[in-house]
Image (cartoon, rainbow, N blue to C red):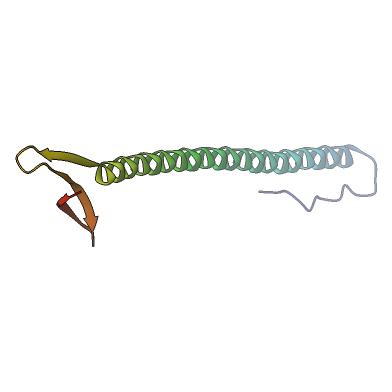
Length: 118
């Protein structure tokens, strides 16, 4: 607790004046230490908050990178599925001498096995 206001030392020089002056100096020293301690606490709290903010930023970047990786993997899987769907296979019937295309195609969100004459 601050010790301000300080006691006036009086007008007469003497023992009482010196003792009061010394006490006032001790009180001023106490108040300065108290204020500096509060400033140091505030600086430490600000530094800690800054560190936590940097940590949170790094964690956010990490989560973003993980999300981008998952998106890329999903895009790769979709491209692979699309290429599998788009590829057709041919079959030649030796008896009828006809050629048929067969494979998978996507229609209205469903996979359909197709088999048609080429």
